[in-house]
Length: 304
Image 1 (cartoon, rainbow, N blue to C red):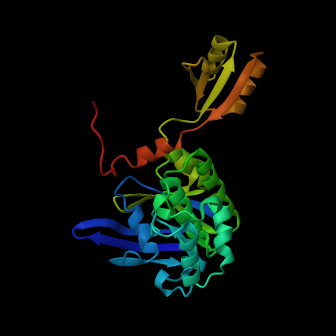
Image 2 (cartoon, helix red, strand yellow; image 1 turned 90 degrees about the horizontal axis):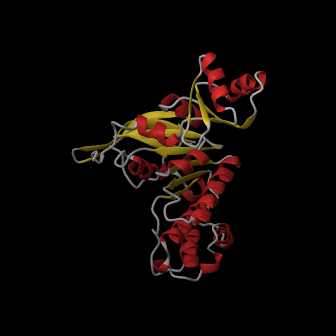
């Protein structure tokens, strides 16, 4: 369990985090979203004692990070890619972290295999690509087999295979009962990974809700049904007669708005309209996020 309680952090006159409160619970992936400058990184660094709050606190399993006797066994964090000393090999970086935290040496080999770095364990970290650095940071976070995991932009720099690996990894960690808290600017990945969302803007909480409800509540576009049929005009006439708004898309499919696929299929079947494709669509996480945070973005390009 992560509990953020009235967290406040200032940098001079700038208020980075403003009385922020939320909880991230075990057994699910909590996505942490917000525009640039929203206070995400500051909040995550405060969780592990890298920033001292001006007010409030963060509790990890009921205790502050500085009160944990063996912190790496409770929380593992990957907050910055390539944070390891560039002159060390991947193996010796992990070995140093393990030995300084009284973790068994076997864990070094285990996390190297788990993150796909076993083949480059003897290479110096300074020669790693951004993606390899990300994997090493994740390996470091996993060393102590912690109950809580913090990942700040974990897919940054990874190739498609690495992105899919991260997606699978975090889901498996949550399925094991761990608390997984991750930030990302890639909405498509967050939509496939997170169960719950915490969204901030200008240091304040904007939303704390599950994924489906957030999209439903904040999408401009309504639920739609995509239909492919050889009887386009007849189907559109039938739907319009039922008071259902519909139009033909550029790809030729009929889009029915504000209705579910079952209703459209029932109408078509009752009148002998042959259906080749019938699929429900909903608004996207990106659309919902942009709508909610429109007034909270620190930087916004002007229209041409």
